[in-house]
Structure formats: C-alpha cells, structure tokens
Amino acid sequence: MARKVSFSALESRSARLRLKIRRRPYSGPSLARGISLMYRRNATNGTWVLKCSDGHGAYWTKGFALADDFEDADAKTVLTFYQAQDQAKKLARGEDGSAGTAPITMDSALKDYRHDLEARGANPYNAEHPRLHLTSALLAKPVALLTTAELKRWRDGLLGTMASATINRLCRCVCAALELARQHDERIQNRQAWETGLAGLPNAQEARNVILPDDKVREFVRAAYGLDDKFGLLTETLAVTGARPSQAVRLLVKDLNDHLTRPKLMMPKSGKGGGRFRAEKKIERYSVPITTQLAAKLKVAAKGRAENAPLLLQSDGSPWDKNPGLNYHRDVNKIVVAIGAEPEATMYCLRHSSIVRMLLQNVPIRFVASLHNTSVAMIEKHYSKYITEHTDEISRSALLQHGPAIGDNIIVLAS
Image (cartoon, rainbow, N blue to C red; front, side, top):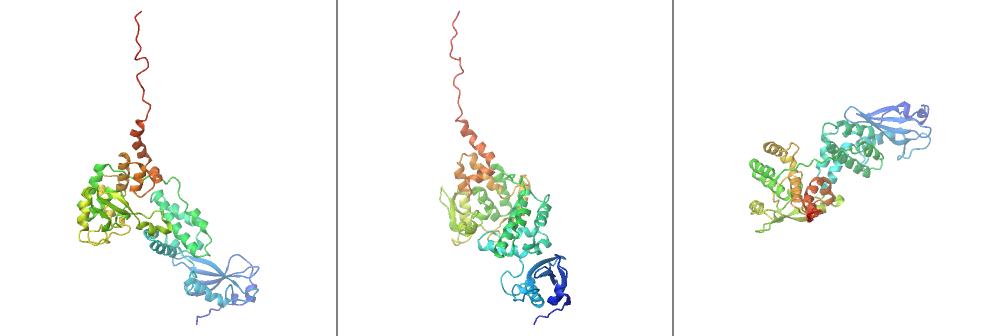
C-alpha cells in the first residue's frame, strides 16, 4: 500500500476553507523525490495542483482535479486530499497504465514522432535532428506548458549559428512533433505557442543551389572513385541520373535494365508530398535513362546477387543508410576542397547540375521535372535563372526580324 503523507493545512475540508482565496497555489507535502502536491483556493471547489521536477533544476506545475471543498469526492474529477496524493504520483510517473496519463514532454513528443515517421516509411532523422539544438530544459518540459515566448527565444537563439532556411526546416520538424502530440492528447490546448513561436523566419528562401559545370562534375566523380570504388559508383549514379541520394540508395538489382544501347534505371520515387501515403508512394518507380558506361559498372556490381538485393552498397558490403549523407558527408567535404568547388557544395549539387544541364540542352521543363521526380512549379521556383537562359535561343528565333533598311532600294535620279 502506498504511504500516505499528512499535512494538516490541506488534509481536511475545514482546514482548506480557512485559507484565503488566491491565484497562487498553497505549497503542500512532498510525495516523492521531485513530486509535490499543491492546492489552489478558489471561491468554489479548490484545485489540486501537481508540482514536478523536470530533472534539470526547474519545475512544472499542472492542475489535475478539484478538491472536495463543497461536494463529496467521486474519485475521478473531485478528490480528497489522500486521493489527490495517489493521483498526483500516477500523473507524474505515468503508472496507472492508461495511455497519456503522464504529460507528454518535448522529449517524448520527438520519440513518438520518430515512431510515426518510421511507421510511414519516412526519414526518422527529422525527429532526431532537433535534439542536437534543443535545450535540456525544453526537452523535459510538458508540451501543454510550452509558451510562445520561450519557443521564439529558442528559435531566435539559433540565428547566426545556421542559415535562416535551416532554422525554418528545424522548426518545421519540431512543429510536426508537437502537433502529433496534440492530436493524441486532448489536454494540449496551446497550439498557438508553436505556431507563433516557431513561425518561419522571413527572407529565408534564398536559393542555395550550387551548380557545377560538366568538367567539375566529372572531377567530382573521379575524386569519389579515388576515395572508394563503391562510393564512386553511388556518386556517378547521382551525377548521371540527378536523383536524390535517398532515392538512389533504395535501388534494387532488378531496377537495372542494362540494354546495350538504351540502358535505364527504374528509380524509386522520393515520397515527397505523400503525407500518410508516403510508404506506398516510395514503392513506385519511374524510368531514368543512364549512360552505357554507368550501366556496365552497375552490371558488374549486381553480378551474382538476388534481384531484391540493394544495387548500391558501401565499401564494407552493407546497404547505405536511409539518410546516406550521415555516412559520406566527410568524404564529400574532402572532394569539395580537392576540386576547388564552392564551400557550400554538397552531394545535392550533382542533382542541381543535372537539372540545369537538361534545361540548357533544351529539354522541355515538363520532361526535366519528370526525370527528377519533382514538379514544374519547383523547377520554376528554384531554377528560374537557368530557365531564362534555356529559353533565350528559342525566343530569339521568334523575334521580329527587320527586312532591308528603308530606302536601300531607292534610286536617286540625276538632276
């Protein structure tokens, strides 16, 4: 049986009613380490309030039931002093076995978000990345108690440490985790706290696309092969197809069609914009042409392996991670330095370069979008500068061309 704690000022109804009505709760007994019971005196039934340590030197409070000041306890919403003790400990520890009893903290919201991403076949990195930047106090705080001011203070504290666009992406991940928590706990009624506090920073849409000329792309691929053959094969596949790394690493042996003159890959879709149907969308494939040279290398890599085996592997023979950048980002940094590319260049520059190469080769924008698993709208948004260059020669041929200058065919008669 749980030990009951005595506290004369709050034990009885008559003792509580002698207290003055006030907004600030009266301190009560300590029930366990980091857990205390408090009482707020109201004009009607008072409120039992839980005070709980966040494990980092701070406390949070939460009103959870009415006191039996003017009506009898029902062991549910109206509690006696001793019933409130038991309920407070269960609330703090989540020990009653019912889902959602303990307040959902930022930490548990991110854990739940990770599980949700994994269940939908999405990248769990979006739930792990925010942990690198969130403070321990925010991670330990219940979602229901988060305020606009503290979330905005955290967001603004990131300025100067990363690009505004990166901050916005980080905030979107946190908002997604908090929104998921709200959907599963009706006690969370402070959606405005993150919608306002983590609102996107303005002027953060500056294009960061690094475009490499073809000779630099070839240098990039050669440098990758110089570091590791398997890494080089992945890099060449990305350079030729313009696919996202997360797509290429999901290629299977059976996705290679090594036709003698028209080889292609059946590239897995990215799942972007798939929402709850992301997993189904990522199963879909679309045809991407590749060079005969790349097809020959992929054929050698696939030799003797099962059709459902990953086509591209790491140097130790293991599949690439769902977020392959975690495995190769240091190698990419070495390549960028070695070839003298812009410091901001990443593996994604191969995709950007592929899109621009096709635009400048007069490939219709709709085809470019389809071959890169994106939309015409996204091409126009992020590559408008190159679209203008792409259309220059086409539009120039349609300009009004002047005939012979007026007067050129006039004969002057002698006087």
